[in-house]
Length: 140
Length: 148
Image 1 (tube, rainbow over the protein chains, first blue to last red):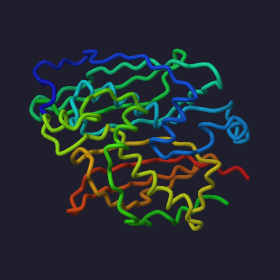
Image 2: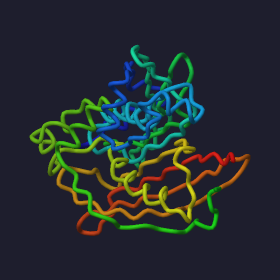
Image 3: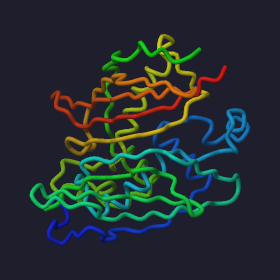
């Protein structure tokens, strides 16, 4: 499908904002869906044995949540690339939920190629958990 | 045992072909809160011009991580999985993955950088379809702690 209009894209535009609650159920669901069964994402004793404060969310889950808001704006198949660094873990308690806040902003516009760069920020407890999370989107 | 920097340049695969299914796309989309209907409804995906359900942006990790396992378990590379933290990831899509794709993956060890007791191991998974065309490139960097 055609992507969003490049003519309507302006650097600084906020294109998406979403808060997502993460629980242990979220992590188990992501483990099953992705095939990533590293026990640091479901077993507190194991996580502590390797120096973590307890179970942490999959970085790829956080990255995927960020991708979802970009893709919903871009339209399916229009995200050309997407990358990030994992800079801070998100501890997920056994019984409670944590909330991450996601924002996606247009950071650069290439009108000739009709490609925009979208920067994604995912924050937990007021701190960014992904570094340099950037996607390029094919526009129309 | 530390990571062996001489492992740079090794490649693995292709192993078994991975068949992208509707069920897995839906399951993954739910897991990452991807709400686009083209991940769930075949008619919507076809209206958008795709052959079948469209995989979410990071779905290729399902395929790439299976291939990366070959690197992690290779004793000549020397990655201790209990000391691994995921440091970076990047997806480049040459076309969207859709249900019905049969994907072959070759994984390459592109770089191993060692500093301050940590080895940064970067792998690149090249995903190709049944016709041999490139579908996606997935670059993943693992940080491996080298404490004794």
